[in-house]
Length: 187
Image (cartoon, rainbow, N blue to C red; front, top):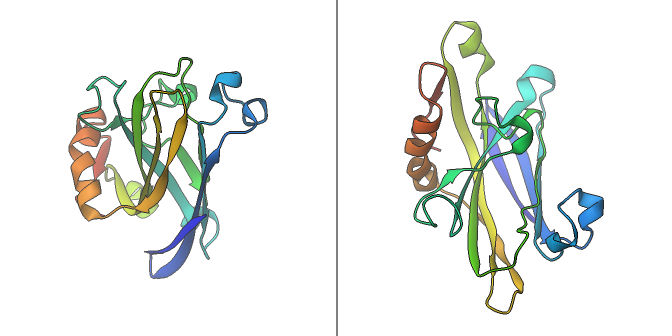
């Protein structure tokens, strides 16, 4: 279990992340028994405010040797349920939980790294008629490698820094152009 504190709106919140091997593909709703051993990542948020003042979201990007850039660049992590909804958030709500359990139908050598950012879109700005602005608050990396022998090795959860957000902002701006969405420059 990895945890950290974050600051938002003058208050301190907590973020806890657990990445474990998938030992129950059916229980997690993942694709068949092929998901066994791949990671299951769950990140939870605790924040002292309630309601609209505790609304956050998760922005997740992945760099993988089987993505469009062949692992050269981070790309927005698609979530099939909301594939046609133009939002940079894969999860959003009051103290939202990030859940992801990636897998592959075939085990071939692969490197997969996620940068997951807890962020918010200040409601006061939207109500004032401004574009939806994504403000990063905290972030962590996690992932896995599929080895030559078909084994899956999980990567350690690690904190992300401002430079990590700055690296993915151009990707987010290209995928979700203004005026609907804007992105803060730094974590």
